[in-house]
Image 1: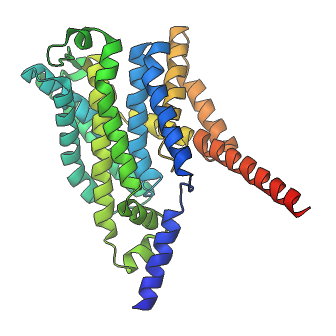
Image 2 (image 1 turned 120 degrees about the vertical axis):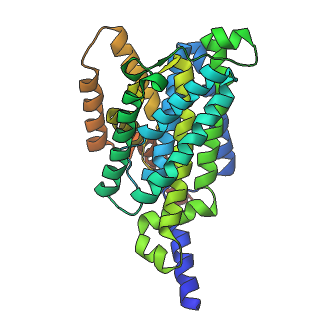
Length: 345
């Protein structure tokens, strides 16, 4: 019994120490305040619809990082939940006339319900097999959306999604005010992700990621934990997809295609796997770059983003956020060593 408790302590200690470093609480609070100020100021300096895209894709990347960075599961079919929520949100908003936050929450709930059977089948596989199962489900939904033309619009997409918001005309007509009305939904998803990884549940996920056999031997139901985080991740992706569809006023087959899943994985790796907050940073880089290239009339956007992805993988293995955190830690450690040397002298 004592041996089992010792092993449990080792697993939880290892999990709690990775992938995030211990940060001074005042520094953490300062960084969170700075991030909130940046988010609030974003539409003042960037075209509001582009700013909204950054937040939506950033939240989508956070949902991927919950699986990839904190559980060790690579999903190539997460567009299924992003796209399903986009369509369901649009259908609710068009047919019921409910305010868009209600429609977005409805879309996220449907995405979570869809994730239950999908996750149940997918988590029984690992590695590339898990990725292929999720990809197969996403492609199946793509086919269904394409065939259900009366419901989804088929190849033409679901158009005319309203931004209904309790009769507030400024929010419904002006992208600037819509940004701030939709921001609480994005923050809700980010908070849910942060609370997940900061809880004992999150420590178990890290233990499963690092050594699933030992976690199972210690009594953790590995498949159950994987299904739970898969559903949570799907709900967060659903929030992002719903906000994205309302912001653009339509949902198309593009939201369900496999390249959308690939794009969000690229964004996550670019920002930094296992950092959680690297996703929004990667989203800002990719979305702004795509917007600038599209505005200039450049057609080979994929070539540029692909090249950047390769460079990040080769030169910055921990992504932008992770590499920056390592540099700061090295500078702080070097400064501490210098001060200690001067005291000894």
